Length: 346
Image (cartoon, rainbow, N blue to C red; front, side):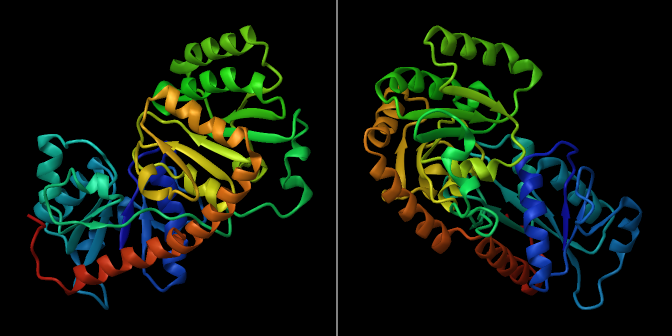
């Protein structure tokens, strides 16, 4: 199996590949990555190895090219349909929108398709298998040491609410800031943080939010932390995690927070509504500022609810979303492809 990563910048797709491949190989799956921007520890092949794809492997009649982006589907179509290499093509789709005609054409050239959620699958017009992303429950875990406590942060108050991700309109950072500006004066035991990078084109967006925070006099209790060395630590320090996105592809952060035993409030963007159950937190319509603020306030007003939801979320993630489950389900698709006749999904 080959997992191409034809994008140099780090993305959610890259993170998925980096996390899954070592686990798949540990379970006996012969899979390598290919492309730029990958860590040195990851097994991978270069472009010079491509001529070998004209020959079938020792134990299988062909190899599987597992694409997750359009350009990777294009490369797969060229390798298989034009260069006639011994490949079968698999595509994982996370998009939650109607695909453009060319993308639909590419998808119809695939031998199998995976959707990362039922919502993303609803936009596909071909047979597919729904396999939701999982989370590494060893990497993301509940508080263990004193360093995992809110007190170790040195921030004022007793409880922490936060959100993580790039600072931009689509992530709903402004919705979070607006809710905190309204709520924090009424709940003095709480402090709020935002972790994540601000790109150059969003510096003005961030500055406008900083100005709003300063005008409210909340500079010490509503903070931009930027890119932190270890976001996992901050999940453990939070009592409540908020994912206020207006748009998402999939969105792993609520799973990471729940695996850290942290209560969650999310929008219904991406796959959030499919991953958060009623006991673990609350889901509100994307972009609905009053609903988001109301949901957050329920937890700020009663920190005991955070503990209850955090415990429920931890159990929910460990049962339904361990990364091992995702790897095992993908393996069933690989095996089904190896056993199938040579036909595209259309």
